[in-house]
Amino acid sequence: MKVAFFSSEVFPFAKTGGLADVSGALPQALKKAGMEVKVFMPQYKDIKPAIQYDGYGLDKLGNNVEVVFIRNDAYYHRDYLYNTPEGDYADNLERFSFFCRQSLEILRNMDFCPDIFHLNDWQTSILPLYLRFSNNSYFSQSRTLLTIHNLAYQGYFPLNKFSRLLLPPEAKDTLSIYNQLNFLKSGIITATAVNTVSPSYAEEIKTQEYGCGLEKILQENAHKLFGIINAIDYQVWDPQHDKFIYFPYASDDEETKRKNKEALREEFGLEKNERMLIGMVARLTEQKGIDILSDALEKILKEHQVIILGTGEEKYHKILKSLYSHNQQNFSLHLKFDESLAHKIYAASDLFLIPSRFEPCGLSQMISFKYATIPLVHATGGLKDTVKNYDFKNGKGDGFVFEEYSSSALLEAIERACQLYKNKEEWHSLRRRVSQYNFSWSESARKYIELYKKIIAGI
Ligand code: GLC
Image (cartoon, rainbow, N blue to C red; front, top):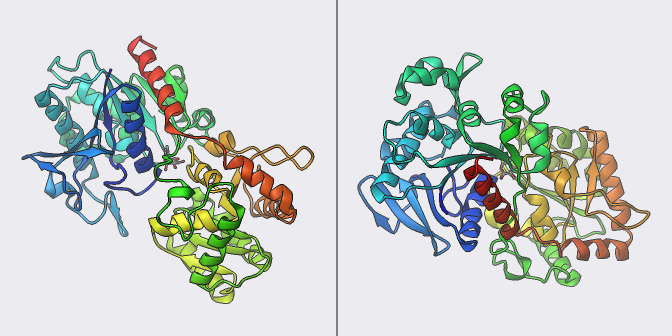
């Protein structure tokens, strides 16, 4: 089976979030499972492909998957992928529709006709519309799968930009909603099938609370909507072979894990005490729960130690900085993006916070497991699917879960975690158990291949 995998970011070439991790790992797992795969992404500023042609470059992902970089320096040779701190680039419609059109052209030139176009998020979701209105029959047997990694990002633009898409007037209706052009909406309607990155999120997005205005469209297309949980790449996330952390350790090696905690405290001037070390690595936006966390943080810092890494909304930077100035022995704050520090935090923390308001899948909880760090999550989306609340009566569960999205529910869950933390034996036994979990891509890739086959068979 031939698969053309489309993504606007692919680790290690370009990354702003979880989409890049998935796009870097899933194609390799598909290839391992016997698929013929080519990955397509824009050639951003710092990307230097091994082979450079006129309009595109070629390189390899993990030695065996071909990546095609669509080149257009006017569009992609910029400091950021989608937006500057001042806001979105004004020509994102042109940038990503060009990416889709040009990729189709290159596929034809390479004579690679995919059975499946696997599209990811709004940046690539307009591709099925180009296929529908193409007057070339080359791709007439190809089918499309659109994976939604986050419904909150839809790619919407003013209606008067329609002509820039170089589509016939009949295409306008499919693209329009609420008096705007909406790439994701058109993708949901025109893709042969749609999936999200966890079964729970696939259900949630059909409701008004999580549907971000597209719930009706999703309900109408529920017959072709699926949920497949993500996985993580253990080549990247394995404490035993992690070159970023202070002391590599086998998941169940409590002693060496403790040394990582001490080393991190030392590096960032945190007091050495009996406190639980709570880590968080995330975009500091309300989606990630930074609103309820910043309300609760003062109380948390009275009893625990906290390290936060990430950037986001200025409003929260201010709140965090002010809390930091009063709590330097027990609070370490890093308002930036730093891959190597992220690894250190996973390794050093006792508890890892993921208080997201909504979370399509979430990868941090799976990474935490591998690093023998206990996740604490809001019961939503993929978090709900992967973390069951610890039950003190029978010792079952994988971490700590709170149901109501509020600071008090978050605080109460931290209290429960701390209660277990004080019982060293049980805490260690939970750590040991979760560190053995296996969220590897081979299983999720198998599910994607099953879905590809269903799509080809007509669902
Ligand atoms: C987005 C989602 C996150 C998901 C990731 C990869 O970043 O917010 O929940 O894990 O995509 O699919």
